[in-house]
Image (cartoon, rainbow over the protein chains, first blue to last red):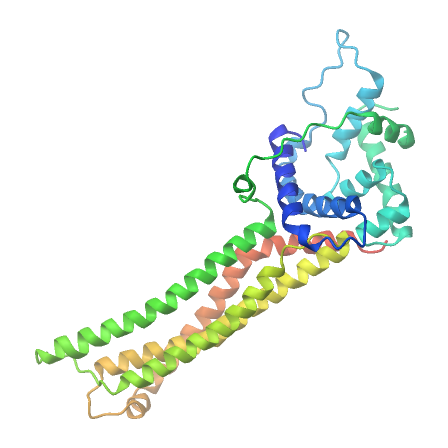
Length: 141
Length: 219
């Protein structure tokens, strides 16, 4: 999400949903697994609003990589990555988020309710899509 | 592009500070599509109950006003058959029982629309079918209550304008064409209005859920 307000709204939605869903936590799974699921499911449903505002997805409109500002390459890569992720669908965002959080294909599959093979295929496509988006902005790393 | 390298950079990123709200009241104003649906469902249930109560009072008031006050002044154009009271209220309370039955089913489904803890695909399937079931229950409720409402109004009308020496069946036989048009017209309108309403308030979240589920299908 691009703006601080949007991010705060989403955080509030997630907190509210965690609060309401807590009685369903049966301790059969780890608390962190349960929390991830509630948060991700809430975010996927909430993120549909984004589609109505395609103008928000323009890549790095206010970023300045001019001579004066020498950005840290690592930070710059992450920044481009974040902006590319903005162009993904909510499901793709969830998959790449789980991946970045270090979950295995099997764990991602369990959390998303899809097979391990399907997870692998989808993740490869998403990574390819992100690479293409970043390349189309004239950046490569 | 090296995603493993990105992943390790992501891990090193400091996590942002989360400001927890001071009270639950702030959180209750959720903009989640499902929360918005639940809110509109709650409003609809309330307005249906109020409408039914209003109908009961309205007919009682009309009957009292035209039947006793005007008739007692020997007003020539108004005739009222007080024997129609029991029929009206038997029908009215039967409609209330039907409304209560479906209302309870609706409420039970409504309460279940909050669990987000299953895997994404299972959770969305559950939400999708719960929502569809809710919509079908809502449609059935309208189909079940519509005949009662139509008969109540026809009965009220006949009670007010019919000469006292004619019974309801005689009047229905005499004016069957008008009543058939009223019944078919009102039923068609109710059917159309229900579908329009559902599409307006539930159509978008439902198609959003469907598109998410399609995206989760095996590739």
